[in-house]
Length: 389
Ligand code: GLA
Image 1: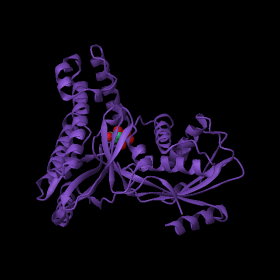
Image 2: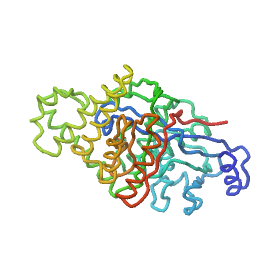
Image 3: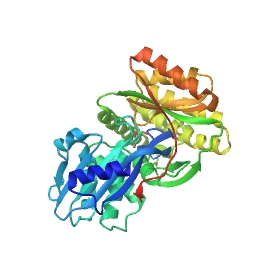
Image 4: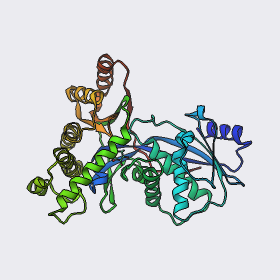
């Protein structure tokens, strides 16, 4: 990979002398969906799939971005003197947004830089290709410009800030945090209210985690996402007229049930119910995992899907087909939609002996019902973003 990237770098920018090499993963969330902007818990892990980058400082104020996946955009040229989102920059608005966020925090880069990327995270599949790129950019900037006082958590927060304020999606912190802080063979149990986290080893001796890509992405994903977020904010405001809480994640399901009449809007009520119960499911799922009770973990994943489908309404027909097929397949411990929703991927835990039947069975039934193929990836949990040798 490095060679391919560096050859391209040399072709575009004369040579690759002094260019440095970086990697930033994608992520999959095992449970705890749409809880991260509600002060709840999440349980994601970093993937070995991700975004590779080669980068080098320039001696002028130009910034060049080139994606080997989206080569039709050619070299995108921006300038340190005009850090604004431009439609023609397309994908490069993600890394540029990070430069902008650094600048806003007082990290004014002394020069521009050239950056070439190539990634193997399927785009728009809900596996955080954008967070991967944001954190990659953060790592590149700190490394190239010798910025030593930003932690990986800071880079995650900067990535989220740029996505919220430069690219217009009000995402929570889960994706960038996972990409920055991922650890091989571990998932991250993060409390988004306090930002306290712990690593939990994922040792499934007799099962695999399989991601199934529906290969659909419904439009308006960002606006529907922002709507969900607003509905939760409104539900919280209604609860706060009586309760002293700062987030939906502060409530146990019992406290929620005792006070839910404060929320008069039926849609907001469903959204808040999901946020509260999903947070509890995530806590329970991590406890089950620690007890070695994978069956319970899977059952909680299934409940998570039902809640995301019926109360949070972020699933879609294609994803429900995949999940229903998975639930009917012997040897499937649990299966649910993962990520922001409205398409994208499911995540399933499948017993080793059932993996082949899962892939062929779901593969052909999905094709028959939906008309196109799904894609399957067996999860390998990798490390967070870093500079590579
Ligand atoms: C997207 C967002 C995350 C999170 C998930 C849903 O991936 O970027 O912050 O809210 O959706 O859990």
